[in-house]
Amino acid sequence: METILVKDENPIRWIILNRPDRLNAINLKMIEEIEETLKEVENNDNIKIIIITGNGRAFSAGADISQFKELDPVKAWLFSTKGQGLMNYIEKYPKPTIAMVNGYALGGGLELALSCDIRIASTNAELGFPEINLGIFPGFGGTQRLVRLVGKGKALELMMTGDRIKADYAERLGLVNKVVSPDALENETKQLALKIAEKSHIALRLIKAVVNYGLDSPILSGLEMESLGWGVVFSTEEEKKRVEEFLSKRSK
Ligand SMILES: CCCCC/C=C/C(=O)SCCNC(=O)CCNC(=O)[C@H](O)C(C)(C)COP(=O)(O)OP(=O)(O)OC[C@H]1O[C@@H](n2cnc3c(N)ncnc32)[C@H](O)[C@@H]1OP(=O)(O)O
Image (cartoon, rainbow, N blue to C red; front, top):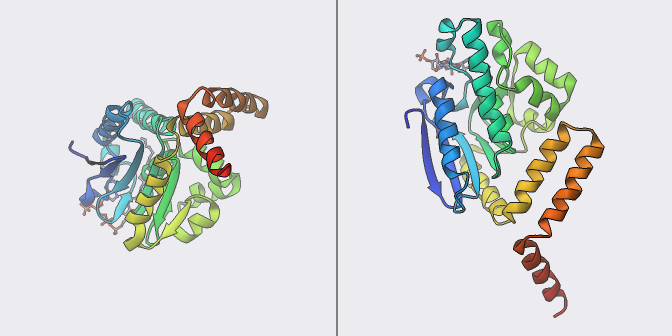
């Protein structure tokens, strides 16, 4: 891999964006390599959860601006579609995903973090959509995902001003789940990943599917999906084992 490092620490696959001299700016190659490494473990039962982070002082400072000079309208459209394809794939990925935001998460970098299920940020992280300062706007799904996470007013303010915000404010907005010191970031993220990885992977997969489907549907369709998913978990050994364990402890 040219643009990412991949490390398996079962049950975790770490994907580390690795263009530190460019603050992990996202180019076409990086999009393809992230997709490739995710595809590789989609059906690998040893890997139960994915953590995405950045090497150096940034998670990612966004799409690689040096590529923009080559973009004509059609290429820009295709680049946006390609990036959106990756973000959609991560959002629907059958295993849980965590973005470990170790520094700048800007533009396309923030869009990558937004496509993950959970975001843990370091106190020194700065997040934002500075695209407006380049005369453009988020194009890897940020216009849609940010508004769903923090509400229309704050989302529009962030996109219209291009302001970078600190991690503690991002936490208050609901943009990140938790903020921890840089020293504690890796361990805290890992502990969270291990805690989630212990749960029933079928139930985890259904939670993601039902929540994501529900966000794009009328509530009655979302509720129907929830009930169908409920039916599915009762076909699993995991459910039988875990309920049995709980009940047998109670009866002692
Ligand atoms: C067509 C579909 C597009 C999809 C939608 C996505 C759009 C985007 O993401 S547009 C990009 C949005 N991001 C930005 O505008 C941030 C740009 N970077 C910065 O503002 C600053 O680098 C900083 C505030 C993040 C950090 O500043 P500083 O600490 O002073 O570090 P440097 O500016 O010296 O950066 C070091 C090195 O990294 C290069 N670099 C940083 N960001 C990018 C980037 N997004 N693309 C390409 N290269 C980047 C920067 O040029 C420096 O390189 P050298 O000059 O060679 O040292």
